[in-house]
Length: 420
Image (cartoon, rainbow, N blue to C red; front, top):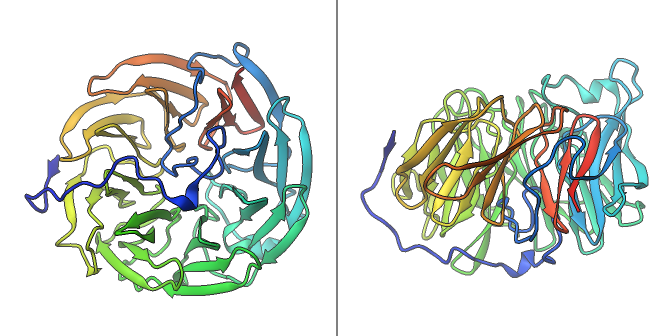
């Protein structure tokens, strides 16, 4: 069901907004959901048909375990992993660099060595290396939630480590950081405390720490902040339990918020397109909110929600906006296409399996990868058209990356280069 909180339509900003802070080479995929932070690729000749043995350039076994998504800059892939066991107290949180052309591991570096007590419990679907790295200006930023954050150079040398930001997560680490104007920003939504943190990207020192001030009963969430630009100024938008809020990336001051009641365990990264934010509200039953941030100040719940949709909205995968439509898949495998401006349903279709990975758009095709390692490739458009169904045969929760005319997928045991 779709309905508008307000029967108006604010002027839409340019759909192809490009901020100087996120200028990346066309062939790069430098952070979670790529150079646009929205899962949209400009890469060409991306494959859309493969199997575990066909159209595979290489397949590299990755030591340990982790669900961080691969990122790629200048022919090098970066990801994180965790080796050892909590019960054996020999945990090692590591950063890896893999050559994109042949899949060989270039370096494998221990970043942190947490105690079993510090690691704590995690959800069965989660790992200790779930947040995705960021590569920017010769540095690799890796994040392990409450266990710490670090920066490395491209040769794998550790520049700084930050382990002072503490909180008690419910299900382990989840959300990835965002980087804007020299500040590395991430959400800390635990059982004990909830805040958003900004670190100096050069030193790792805490620049600001802003409390959520949420009234939600269940306070834990795992979302990745989104960087947007409104009236020429950057804002960092971070969903948490009960609300989504925008912050000044320089000072951490809260600029506006939209409340959504008792929504908790929020995972999807917001999408910014057409001057609007598309935000999922988390468990138990998520809604999709289309929010107009222009002119928003303070509590914008009643004034800046353009429309809301409450069917088949994901708890885990992020959404995707392509053209004038917003696409998403629920955790249980129902894919949907809505009009991005008014929220009207274009189509819904049940895919097979459960989903955690976020979709990717390349050359007018949308790639939905389920937890069994099966990818459904669907034609972008207001009518449903399945182009291909591809099997890797290994489960995956990580989101794919596309660069160099190839698709990079992390499965439970391997990293794959699909295509040329």
